[in-house]
Image (cartoon, rainbow, N blue to C red; front, side, top):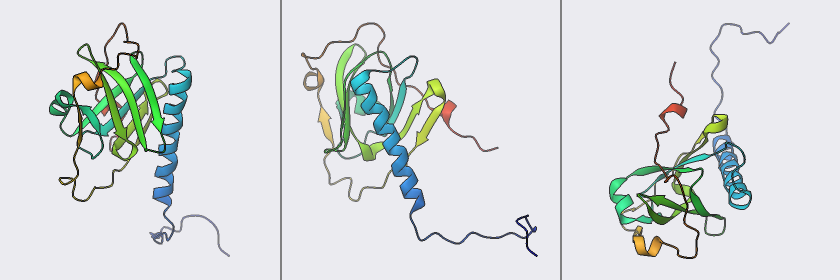
Length: 176
């Protein structure tokens, strides 16, 4: 007679022939995109706010040159009080948003594939994403935006606090 109790033997799980890890990551990315879509239409409810970490050197990322120089590999932005024109473009597979850095308004365009983390600290929810290496990254031009190009005169300038770049260390899982 067999029971479901652990028999003390170390049983290795067979390798899956189905891409479950990929499916789960796709589902988590969809959760992030839905949250960003919601915020773009309805704004952020209550104390919700988002941290979005992305690779600044990924092909298709459009940020001002001064930010790229300051953050040559990756950057975390905060979407809380001071952002505008948040847009999720599923056709182009990008997120774009206006933020103020040092009092200068800038538009950022971030391909979905460049995003490495998303968090909503209000509810202590954090998602991490793997980023597929892009072959011949050096051959693909990065998109640079100047401050003048990134200023959108038709967008309302935020008032009050400026955007900030923060560390996600508090939200990372630590080994026990």
